Image 1 (spheres, helix red, strand yellow):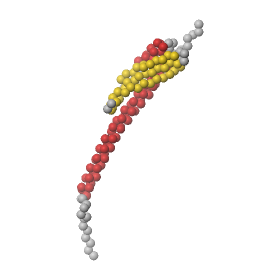
Image 2 (tube, helix red, strand yellow):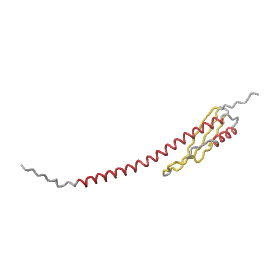
Image 3 (cartoon, helix red, strand yellow):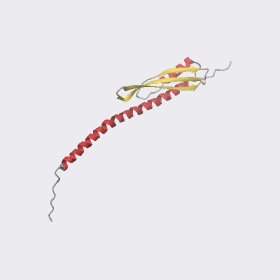
Image 4 (tube, one colour):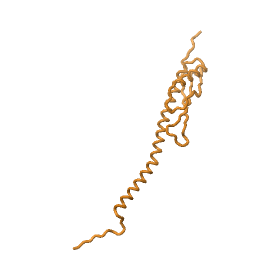
Amino acid sequence: MICSAKAPQGRKPAARRIRGHRAQSLVEALTGFVILIPLGLAAVDVVAFMSAVDSNEHLAEAAARAAAKAPSQDGAQTIAEDVVKHCTPVWMVQSVMVDDVEYSAGKGVVSVATLMNLKLPIPLPGYTEVSCRASSIEPIVFTPAPN
């Protein structure tokens, strides 16, 4: 018995199929990078922003604690601004300021709000600078001596 084998007529040579798979892999890799790189850059911005927000909350709390020792609204404002002035902000912070101080002797609390302007490390379209506001309420601990 004699057997003969012929190559099927519709098949491409092996070299062409390998090149086709390489091109498909290249297209898949480029598509993945187009999606993954912006997501990674946005993640860096989110992490940096969350770090600055946490820093701002701690600063507002420290300013409120210091202002709680003041005898009046003006004293609380001055002390809170002094605390903010002497803080060392994170590298991406453009400015930090006391936004609002409410000294309520009737309620026995002082509220301090701080406003922090940030420049994001990797600017995304429309989000080069971001502001975050934090506030803290502390009980007043200043008590005048009785007459």
